[in-house]
Length: 358
Image (cartoon, rainbow, N blue to C red; front, side, top):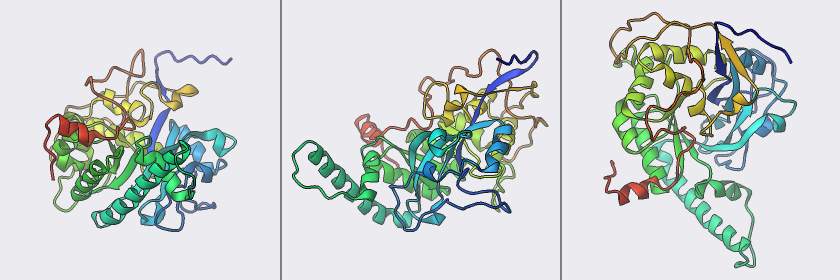
């Protein structure tokens, strides 16, 4: 057993990036296969982990940056349903040894124009799941198996969430309304304009995967709108994790989270956004099973800043520190990781007398 002297340092868990393409392609300019898409518009039977290249050189680069576990998935080149995202550890001799969750969520590249086609597809999946249940119970003598419909069974039954890729205000709202109408367990991924609708997100109990802290603001947006978005979401009571959305840049996600801290995100929540809140479990995330990181004490964070104001701190050394235990109690008693989305939230809200926003 190797003993390491960590006196004067802080111990961190292995970090988690909740949205990447790691293992499915190499960084630009490097030799390697590109396995981040499949042919055809609907591929709910595809599981991303099976295409992982465990020999990819870029995996080690991200481990050096502190990331031991990531969610990886196909982008589908914009097709409606690329397949299931998978959660993997960044070390293992085979894809099967690396996988933590084979089906952590079904990715849907959302836009409102696809709503009717997707509704028809999910209604067909509901009917297929009902027939499957009858066949398993012995109440149906014949049953025609369909690999794609079979992949949707855990989704329509609420066992696995749908991950809607939605960035604009209108797309986020329409995706939420679609998910509630279909009574799906769901998350929103992207959320570039989430800062505009924080009240809507909180009211609908939307779980958000946010990316783009270092993104370029729009023509009429404040310069720091994306820097401050995590703080605005936290202040509104929205549960979220922060992800990179990339391949070569996963290790630099800590700098993005550090920028969010400089613009008002509490240090405790910043660490949670790349550990507990990026994990499908409510206790120690998968990366903590075998990996920790020791770092020197970072600088302190600045005060809460709204978009359009200037930060009062030049802090740039990342997230932390966390003393004694890497995980603190959540600030809100109803707090939960983003992956703990539940099906049927719309029905429960109606029963409680909430009015649905359209």
